[in-house]
Image (cartoon, rainbow, N blue to C red; front, side, top):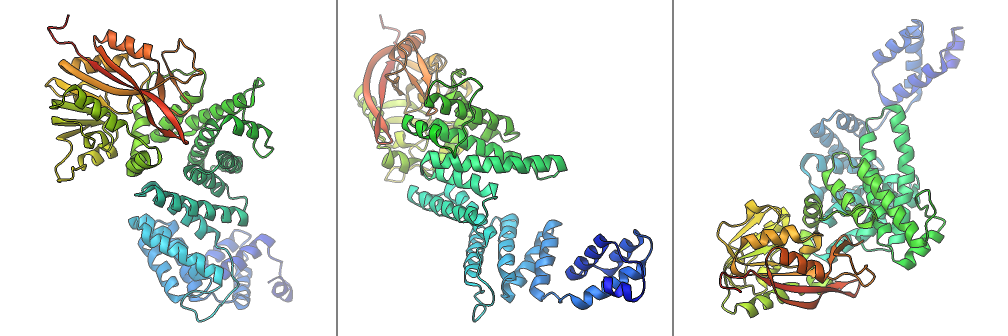
Length: 551
């Protein structure tokens, strides 16, 4: 362009204008837009037209696939998803490499946005990955370009698999999806180690797949450090994507805090000695590696709470995790929002994990205790915190059995629970908080049973008082609580542990029962389940409400 201008003895164009003209001609921008641009630099429109003509002569004409990709991108940015889908689909159908790969990835995103068609999106992401790696598209007879790793296809597929894992029907399926997602994220950060989203998602996938927590924490922290740089840039530039980055940071900080909070003492010592992990401690020096890790976990969780914004589910989880690791917070119960979020997420694989991995037998033990009390069964019984209905299925005999749970997904599972003969386990399932008296039946209950439920309450006095009011005279209350850890001070009535569950002393249960005017009939030590291969010690209590003839 400059050479043409010199031939005409004209004033040279501004360098930036030349760049804009050439780029516009290459991309197919309308000529009138460039004419207007020429007017902005002094009215030398003929120079702009000359530059346009020169650029058009020298720039190769884009192929049809490239035009379709550009058109699809434009429609997608304008929110015209149907038009974008049509353009991308035509490009994929032409099968020209490498544009078909990019169009397949974008078409997958549109499929998710338009109809949440995860199966079609997964198919397209996998096709793009395989084609990019081979340097061809299936429609081509032979390789038509240089093979490469499609970073976006890999990252998007990994994210899709992570979401799919959350709804997996079995633990095996879930673990397989998470492992594949983690491996794809590893491939992404190998190709581009500046991808903060891939680092953060890799750490989250590793945590969910029960990979080493220390490794997961390092990935999460790497993602956080990179994301905070992006956050600063977006904030300075007023970028509209800032809110999504802040939410991603909140999620990553929650994951980091959770990973650190569950490190063993040996892992805590490794964490302190690991140069790749920067612990976020308080200003005062920590007394031990465990203290340093706990302080870092608490600070990460505080940050997650601060950044959670309107995500009530994430905020509830972060607040509960913070209460579990903090030495200052003494919440007397888990928040209903946390419990609801926890068990909604857990519902799909609840039975398999408890009965298989954790060797869980509390429902059978409570059912056996109830039969020992009343061999002929109860008239009206409440399964408090019924979950998916394992207790009702375990031989709890009642003429009418009501289930009550805080989690909507758990309630759905309980309603669908059937005996082998096809009859429903529960006559009625209610959704709500155990401390809401309005949810309890008007008729007095003969039995209230709670299997592994009181671990989400600290002070048991309010709950036992409510249950005592709901019981009929001579009615029974059968429940389990986890025992205080050996290192817990003897005068502690209850404590919130790093696992997020409350443990209780026998003295506290006895005092709460006495206040509620319930009589202690039995207290038997049991093993509630296995955790990391170790038994979780608990106590099975049987309390009864004295009848009018009781002395």
